[in-house]
Image (cartoon, rainbow, N blue to C red; front, side, top):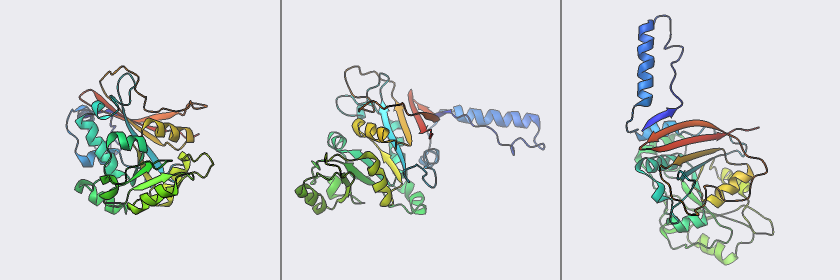
Length: 284
């Protein structure tokens, strides 16, 4: 893996008068070579590169990051799943982003299609999480207006941290009781007669639980709702060197925004032709 952007620059201390011109040139070249070097990054190094701002400073009181993968021609999945578009490096970053988050927010359809399981505690992130007062592993927060979920799966029966289900006011009482009986925490986000879950309220409700470092893994419908609600703070987008054709959804699948939201490029890593981009929203 190598960093393509930003390219490291020397600090003023590195360029002090006591340092000769030759030494400065040699040091600068070494930094550039280190940036361009194709090597395996350790988990700590990746965790530092993807660290959340502290404290999380999104307008919602939390910081919502999305992690998605796309083919060169814009597909967010192949044959209904994202795994065919992934790589070893993509899965390493996937694990690091989970290791940094308080909660992973995901739509019910994605839970069913991808066979979601509970997040696990990883020793590599234990000290970092403890220092921030985080639980040993992130909670999985499933967004579902209907609560049409299988509460007998490991996601609900084997979590290290209780799974959260986020639903609307129209959810059936019987499904709510089944969720609670399975050990899930039920959060209501949306009180309108439509029964829909309000994307902005999802973020604020989780922040009230103390989950301010949020990661969403989609799917495309939920991610479009977050974008439309104006609560998406960062997008980590892996671009796979693959072409799928077909009619797969893009990473966002929803109504067109009134005005495009502007993001700025924060970083780009590359490995085996995969580009791992990171964009942060520009707040007006």
